[in-house]
Image (tube, rainbow, N blue to C red; front, side, top):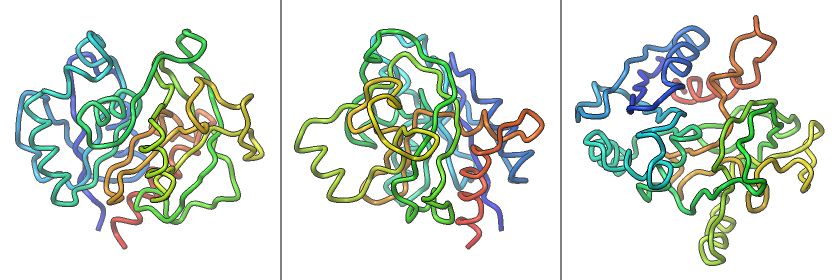
Length: 232
């Protein structure tokens, strides 16, 4: 059975419809929008915090959205093992809500970066990546000004010890180096999970690379892996 997805809509979200469309049309899943002022998750089994500029990115990215009424329900949902995915601005919100460790700083270049990047799959044993091959690099777009992942030594040691790094920026051959890092992220980190493995945050946009007609399908591999792992 395929899961029901809930896509949260904040003022300033601009990838909510992208996520809705990709999940509905390319995974065949049921999808509903969840307004940020509501508390009802409408029986969604996987929650998506989409990309965009929630509340105009005032103060810090995700800092205001973290206090939206629906976030109380999402935090409760997470404590019960509910699956949550934060994409780009959604990742930033998860960090502000302390549902994931670390912070996202301004890109090292101090420039907004919008381009395709390659991702190395570092951990394919999570709910979100099981079934994906570690022998391929996924081509996925990014679009952000604050995607530079940072954590202090104690936090980073914990992340490494618990194998929480899921994606790293890499070359098309899967080689991880400074040249393939688009924003200065520590250890080329592009996506992580929490210790329990039920929450994923990533800066690249898989929903924008799910339409074969546009010549982009690697994001669909991630979305379909999630659906298939739920069914299994």
